[in-house]
Amino acid sequence: QVQLVESGGGLVQAGGSLRLSCAASGSIFSINAMGWYRQAPGKQRELVAAITSGGSTNYADSVKGRFTISRDNAKNTVYLQMNSLKPEDTAVYYCKLSFASPPRAYEFWGQGTQVTVSS
Image (cartoon, rainbow, N blue to C red):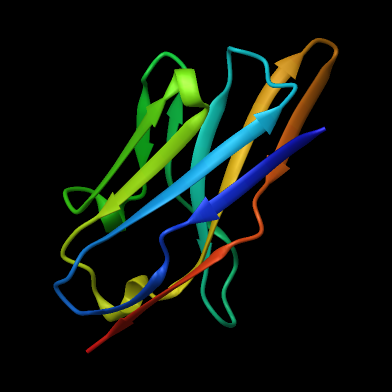
C-alpha cells in the first residue's frame, strides 16, 4: 500500500510564494516519477511539473520560470517551490507517484491541497 501526504497549501497574495511537499510511504520502486497536478473549478486536471528519480524534470509552459520541482529520494518526498504566484494559479494541487513493474504500471494520488492566490 502506498500513501501520499501533501502539505504546504494555503492563501497567498499575488506575487507571493508557497512551497508544497508530498511524502510517499509504502512499497515504492526506486525508479519512479513524481509530479504535481492541479485542478481549478470547472477545469480539467493538468500537469504542473514532474520529476523522475533520476532528476529529469518537465514543466507546464504556464509555470516555467516561476515554479521549481525537486525531490529527496532518500525521503521519497517531492517539493514544488512556487514563486511569483498569480490568481490563475489558484487550484487544488495533487501529488502523483507513478512507477512500473512489468507488466503492470502503478499510479497513486494524494488527497490534494488547496492553493489560493488573491489579487
